[in-house]
Image (cartoon, rainbow, N blue to C red; front, side):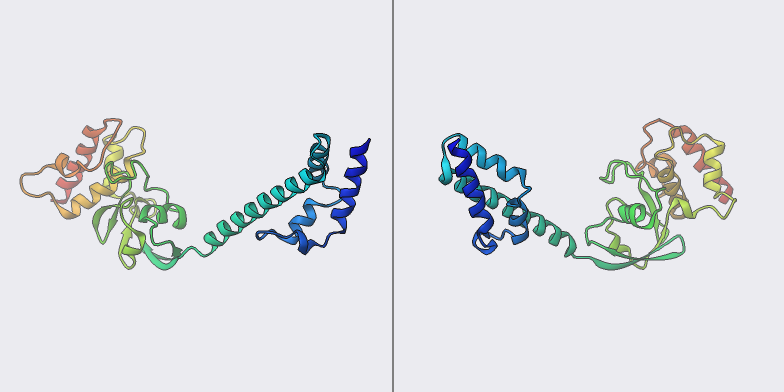
Length: 242
């Protein structure tokens, strides 16, 4: 058939063309060689399609140019994405958590919660709403309660961070932890670390005049509704301290 001779002639012509003559729009020489390799099924397919449909050499040339342009842009986008990731700005941040120092390289926008969970490996603090509304992420910074999902890790360099993992002393539970168990101050347990940390902070801060435990713990939500046990646990520890 006529197209077969035309196809073989064009393949021979492509094999003889220098790579530099085919390089365009940033396409790498190696990519073009791979695309035009003797084992390249893609080349044979598009050449046969072009020739069988009557487009001849002109159509094949046009299709080849299009394919190489697509390949060049794809490779360029991949390189740009890789370079962007590699050159993302990071800063040195040393977090002091539960009495230990953790030198980290963090992006400026990393929250304290993400740093604790993903970089330090302390997963007790939970990500609930990620908007500072549920309190599941509560930790102590220099003894005061904060929502770690809203706090930038870099802003707390040098602060004494305490998470739920740092409350117990070996096998001895913190009084608030023991009271939560005694009064069934939890059900599913997802919000419990935040509830306990908020309770510990509350006992250190104290309630303002005219406010009770319920008001002072209002920033911590329990979707299971275990509030009676939570309040009873905190009240017991507060009375024991007074």
